[in-house]
Length: 298
Ligand SMILES: Cc1cc2nc3c(=O)[nH]c(=O)nc-3n(C[C@H](O)[C@H](O)[C@H](O)COP(=O)(O)OP(=O)(O)OC[C@H]3O[C@@H](n4cnc5c(N)ncnc54)[C@H](O)[C@@H]3O)c2cc1C
Figure 1 (cartoon, rainbow, N blue to C red):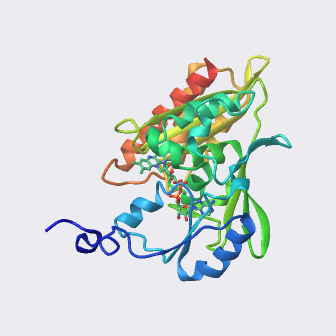
Figure 2 (figure 1 turned 90 degrees about the vertical axis):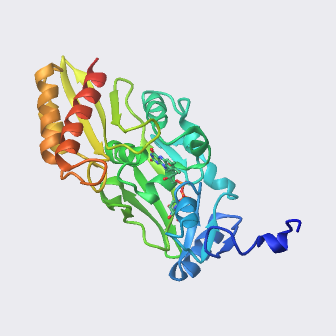
């Protein structure tokens, strides 16, 4: 018997559970739809690179998808008031080449190549990564370390959330279920900012078991404005103030970098899973932090 749409079961044998697809034309429509449908398990669809696989396994069964991919205003990637504004539909791939002048452009370009694989980077979005809040998300680490600000919109209006208040736990953020993350803003970096990024994952493209982003400046031979962020090792990404304190005002010598790496390793509450136990993750954080700092000070 020849295969036809009817006897092959197309329409009934698709992988995800049934859902309604909504394609709002603008942000206001998207926010209205989310406000009306969030309580009925309505979810935003951005790049789909995290949501769609979980739907295919039926781990997520949203009844409504509010697809923001047709909203041109969300594709904005621009410098505004000393920040790089990244709209909700800006893809990871937008950062393959420096997207902005100064050290922030190369920083983002050096981090992005660690995110998944090329086809995923063509679809996945910066803001989708923040909303998804995987503890091993590179963009979450960048946002937390640099002190990003997120803009969330709902039918109640818009609000700004600082990165330090945004990430709340494993795949948990401060966003309410009816809030659309319309943009993230990364502060531009001073021209003399140096950075280092180091990540350990089992294979290229895998999620990090541990990673560190460090930024700092040098003044009169000593380290100023150090920022050290750690991801992949704890429930959510965050700055490690103890490591920063170990660097501030010190010469960029091996002993200072080792002290900061030890401080980071001591400060974390490591995740334990099938990939790595707590002791191993702590050791990885020590190594990633030392190497990121060596890059920044080279
Ligand atoms: C094989 C594989 C490997 C991967 N490796 C990595 C990796 O190494 N590092 C990494 O960081 N990521 C990795 N990812 C995930 C990828 O980066 C995703 O693109 C990202 O996590 C989510 O972005 P998205 O645009 O695809 O979001 P979607 O999948 O569309 O959405 C994810 C979640 O966020 C919500 N959401 C999305 N956008 C918004 C918004 N604007 N406002 C409110 N809620 C929103 C959705 O409702 C959903 O709950 C990997 C994915 C795959 C499939």
